[in-house]
Image 1 (tube, rainbow, N blue to C red):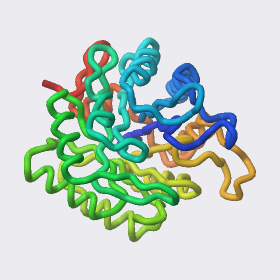
Image 2: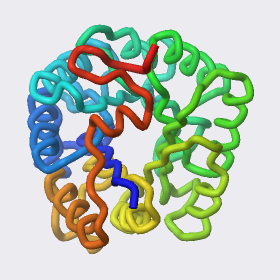
Image 3: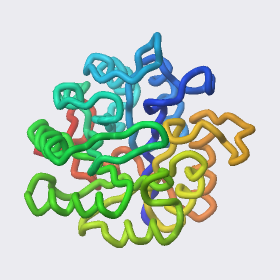
Image 4: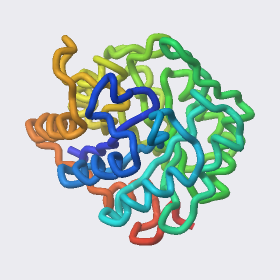
Length: 287
């Protein structure tokens, strides 16, 4: 069976310290959690940055630069993905700022959400013009899109981008299940999305809230990768009695994978699968 891609999502935009003491907020907290994750075994890290005082999400490249450089000091080959989310700020200038990082701070991947969507209390706005502008900027900068799809229609829009020669293979999809307004965490919805993936696609699957373990387990059993971390769920159990740490999640993923004989995909192996540069000072897509 192919090796398991583990994309680690340490913090996200929403969880705060008053909800869980385990959510990393400051650059050093995020870097520390990524260091622990690397010692357990991950393939990729998906980064958000937070204001160290308020904990609110921030977009300025300087915040990401500090985190990325801190990570690459001990994991120079780890695949790094950064967010360009439109959930809390929605101008091209703010969302694309992180894409201008270079040198050792250059991200390998950047999220590209393929349509607008609603969450429980907020919306993520992704107009076609914004998606096209971000995708073109990523291509100019040599950064591969992490294609975030919350339902089958978003996968269809990725095919539109392929037809327009805006994104190139291999395509890296992050399939998100369990959001209140999109595909649910069940076999039918997952199967439709997986069936609709274009050729030369590599997919990981994540679950929102209590569906995280369910979706991760399904992905492991079906031969796909996983997205896991406190960004998507702060609770270790479905009864919401035990607050999780990021290490708790990763140790559990390793245990499930081991039980069916799936080894973890190393960052070096993921770089080859996605046709990325080798790391160690060379980042982004192959030129």
